Image (cartoon, rainbow, N blue to C red; front, side, top):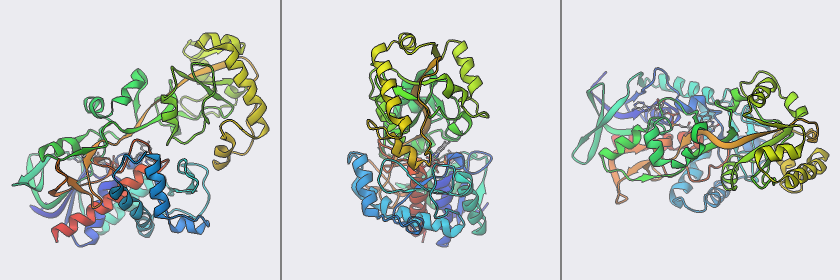
Length: 471
Ligand SMILES: Cc1cc2nc3c(=O)[nH]c(=O)nc-3n(C[C@H](O)[C@H](O)[C@H](O)COP(=O)(O)OP(=O)(O)OC[C@H]3O[C@@H](n4cnc5c(N)ncnc54)[C@H](O)[C@@H]3O)c2cc1C
C-alpha cells in the first residue's frame, strides 16, 4: 500500500464502486476500503432496479420520457421537500449513469418486465411512464460488473477493514485512518451505506422504524452501521434526510425479504380497523407504506382457505403449511365465517362482510372500480382474475411496514456530491454518495429503483468530482 492516493473511497457497495471506477477512469490513483470480507453491501443484496429517464432501454420500447418529466414526478411525489437543484442534477444524470453501467457490461434488455426479478423495464412506482430498469442478475450482477471495472483500472480494494475516522489537515479532509494507520489523499468519498443496523442511530434518525415494534426486521447489509454520521460529525457536516427511510409492508410473521419469505395470496383484501378496504393491495411501495401508516389501528390481509391452499411451496413464510401453523398457534386469526373472523380481529362484521362481497363482485370479474388494482396487476403481467373470497375458513394476517430496507439520513450533499457544512459551504476534500450522501432520497421513495439509482448516479458524480479535485 502506498502512502498517498488521489482519492480514497470508504465503502465498496454500489456508490463506492461507482465512485472508485469513475475516479479511476479520470486517471486518479484510487484506494477503496470495505469493512466486510466481500464487496457489495446492500447493493449486492438488492434487485438492482434502477429508476432513470430518457434511456436507450425506454427508447427501445417506444417509451417517451425525459429528465424534466422525471424531475417533476420526483418533486411532486416528495411534496417539494427536497432541494430542486440537487434533484434536477440527479434526474439529469441518472439516465447517463445507467448508460455508463450498460457500457461497462450490465445487461438491461429492452423488454417489458413484470417484476423486480425479470431483466427489462418495469413500472417503477406510481408514475405513468415506466422507469424501473431491472438488470440481469439483479444487484449481484451490478456489483460484479463494477468490480470487474475496478480490477481493470487497478483500483486496490482493502477488504475486511473498517475505516475508523477521517484524517484532517486544517479544515481540509486529507485521508482516513483504518487499522490505526493513516492514509492520505486529496479527496475522500464516503460511501459507507446507511444506518439500519445500528439501533441507537436508527432510533435517533429514523424513529418511525420503531413503530413496527418486535416485528421490525432489517434486510440491509451488515455494514450499514451509520459510520457516515460519525465521519460527518468530525468535520461539522450538515445532515439531511433525517426521519426518512424505506420500510416495506409485510405480514407480522415475515422475517426475510419477500424473495425468501414469499408473497401473500393474490386473492386477498386489506382492511383497516373499521373493517373497510382502503388500498390497492398491490400498490407500489412508493406509497403503500404511507397508506398503511395513515390507517387508524391495525391493518389485516384477509383471504380464504382456497387462497391459502394455493400458496406456492418453497417459501419460508407465505407457504400453505406455514400459514396453517400460524393459525393453529393462534397468531393468525382464523374463523369459519367472516362475521366470526371480524369478531376475532375486532372489526365491524357488517363492514368486513360487505367489503368482501363488494370485492367479490369486482376484481374476480376483471376490474377493481374502487382502487384500480386490475391496472397494477396488469403492469405486473398478472392477468388472470383472482378467485372470489368465499371458502371458509377465513384468515386475517396483521400487515404492517416492518421490513427495513434502507435509511435516508446522511451527510448533506450538493449536485456534485460535495459534502456541505452547516453554513451550506463545501467541506474541502469530502464527497459522499449512496445512503451516506443525503438529499436525493426523500420522504417518499420513488418506486422501485430510487436507491440504487441514487447510489450509482451520485457515486459516479462523487468519483468524478473527487478526481477533479485531486487533479
Ligand atoms: C434486499 C434489498 C433489496 C433492495 N432492492 C432495491 C432495488 O431493487 N432498487 C433500489 O433502488 N434499491 C434497492 N434496495 C436499496 C439499495 O440497494 C441501497 O439503498 C443501495 O444499494 C445502497 O448503496 P450504498 O452504496 O449506499 O450502500 P451499500 O451498497 O450498502 O454499500 C456500503 C458499503 O460500505 C461498507 N462500509 C460501511 N462502513 C464502512 C467503513 N467504516 N469502512 C469501510 N467500509 C464500510 C459496507 O460494508 C458496504 O459494503 C434494496 C436493499 C435491500 C437490502
